[in-house]
Image 1 (tube, one colour):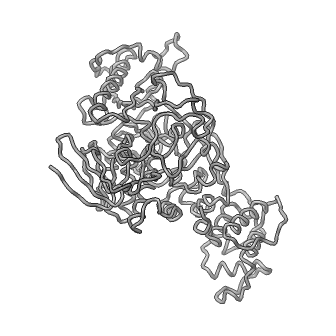
Image 2 (cartoon, rainbow, N blue to C red):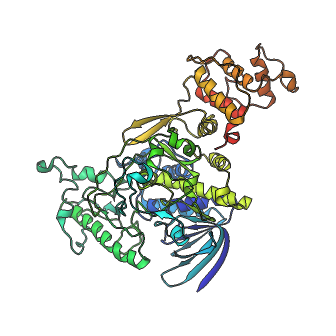
Amino acid sequence: MLLDIHTEILVAGGGTSGVCAALQSARMGRKVIIVEETQWLGGMLTSAGVSAIDGNHLLPSGMWGEFRDLLYDHYGGAKAVATGWVSHTMFEPSVGAKIFRELVASERNITVYYGYRVDHVLMEGDRVLGAEFVNTQGDRLRIEAYVTIEATEYGDVLALAGCDYMTGRESKSQFGEEAAPEKPDDIIQDLTYVAILKDYGAGMHTTIDPPDGYNSEVYRECCRKMNDEQNASLLDSQRMLEYGKLPNRKYMINWPDYGNDYYLNLLELSYSERIEKLEAARKHTLGMVYYIQTSLGYSNLGLANNEFPTADRLPFIPYHRESRRVRGVVLLTLNHVIDLYSEAAQSVYKAGIAVGDYPLDHHHSKAPQRIEEVFPLISAFNVPYGCMIPHKVDGLIVAEKSISVTHIVNGCTRLQPVVMQIGQAAGAGAALAVDAEIQLREVNVRQLQQELLSHHCWLMPFSDIMADDWYFAAAQRVSVAGILRGQTVHKDWRNEFYFHPESMVSADEALSAIQIVLQEEKRRPLIRTSSDADAMSRLDALHLVWEALGKPEADAYPNARRDSVYEGDYLKTVRYFYDFGWKLPKGFCNDLQPEKKITRAEFAFLVDTVFDPFTTIAL
C-alpha cells in the first residue's frame, strides 16, 4: 500500500530534535508531518532511555526549559528530579514520552506516522522535495514537502539526498585541531543500549537468564562490591547505581567504564544489517544487568516492567552518540569552541541559534583500537545556523547529531539540551522559509534569532541571566552582535559564561561599544577620543549616546516631554527617549538618578533600544 501526502514541512525522525522542530514549526502556523520509526517521540531522551539530562542546567533555553518545567510539574519540583549524581534532572523515559506525546497532540498542525523508516529521498536536481518511508509490513509513505528536516538517528536522509558528509575522526591537519589525531580514521563514539532497572523490593528475585556468551570478567571492573577492601580504587556498587538513579526507585544503567558501552559503526549499513549487529549490543547490556543482579547481589533490581513495551524490556533503540555529520555552510571546529572571541570564531558565534555548556566528552573505551585523547578546556558555546544548512543541497535542514561539526566538537554538541535547541531552530528556520517561499540558506539569521528570542531561547550561553530578566533580550542581542562580551569560567563538569549584568560599565567599555555600532552603521565617529577606566554614570552614558546620534536638537522631536528637571546636553537625549516611548525599568527612567553608575544590563538596554544593532549590524 502506498500513501501519498503533501505538507509544508516534513520532519524525518521524531527524536529529540525532531519533536522540537515539529512543535516550533507548528507553533509558527505551519503544517507539519513527523515520521518516526519507533512507537515513541523523543529519541535519546525517551526511546533510547537516556533520561538523565547532560548539561545546560543554568541555560534552560526554549523547549529544553519548557520540557524541564513539565517534568517539575509532574514530579513536584526541581528537587524531585535531582535523584542521581550524574544530572540535576532525572526522569522515567515513559514520563518523557508522555510529555512529548501530549505536547504534539495539542498542536493541530502536526500529524505523526509511527513505525516508518526513511527509504528514499525525493529530489529535483539538488533540491530535496520530500521522502518515501517504509514499515516492516512493506507499506509505503510518500510525502512531498517544501522543507524536509533531517532528524534521524544515523543521518540517513542527508546521505540519500547526496549531501557531502563526514564520519569518523578528522586528522589534525584537516581543520587545524590540535587535539585531533595525526591521521584520520572511521572510528566513531561508542553506542549504549541503556537499561532501566526497577527496585521490586527486598527479598524479590528478578534475575534474568544470562545472555549467550556471558562472561562476568567483562564487567568486573565497573565497580566493586560494598565494603570490598581489595578493590578500593573502584567506586562501590551502590554509588555506581546512584549515578543514574531515577524517581520511583528506578535506575538508568548507562555506565561507560567496563559497563554497557559498545562499539558499532552502523552508519553505512542497511536496515537489516543494523538490526543484526545491534543484537550483540543488546546482549552486552543484558549481561551487565545479570552481573548487577548476581555478582553484585542486587537480585531485587529487575528490568522495569512499566517502561518499554519491548520483549526484553530494553529501550526501542540504543543511544547513538555520533551519526553522519553533514558538510554545511559552516563547519564548527575545536578552534571555534575553545574561545568564542578568537579570530577564527568571530563570524561564527554571531550567528548562534543554540547554546551549550558541556565539556568535550567522548566515549571510546570499546573502540577497535586504543584511543588516547587529551582535550583542552572549552568555553560555553553556541551553534551557528550555518551548521544546519548543507553547502550545496536545498530544501533540507539538518538537525539532531548530524549537524556540521567535527568529530571532536560532536563531543559537546550531542547532548540532549543542545540537540533540543538545534531542533527548535530547525523548525523555526523551516517555518520562515515556507512563509517567505525562500530556500533555507536564504533565511535571514537575525530574523531567525529574533524568532527564537521570542520563544525564550538563548543565543549566547549566559548562565547568570534568565529569560524573565527585563534585560534578557537586549543583552542577548547586543552580545550576539559583538558589542558586549561575556566571560568564560570553568566550574566542575561544566563551563559557565557570564554577562555580569550588575557590574558597572567603564567609559572605555562604553566608548568601544558605541564605536563598534558607529563603525558597523557607517556613521560619523565620536568626537570624544579620550578613554577612562572608571565606571560611567548614567548621565555620561546618555551624553555618549547623544553624541553618537549626532547631537540632535530637542526641537527635532516636537512631542518630547519638556518637564525634566535635568539640564545639559543629555536632556535632549532623555527627551528623545521619552518621545520614542522607552519602557525602561523603574529607577532608570521614572527616577533617572543621573549620577548613579550605569550597569551592563542598563547599558545593553540603552544600546539595543537606541541603535537596534541586532538588526542593523551585518553578520
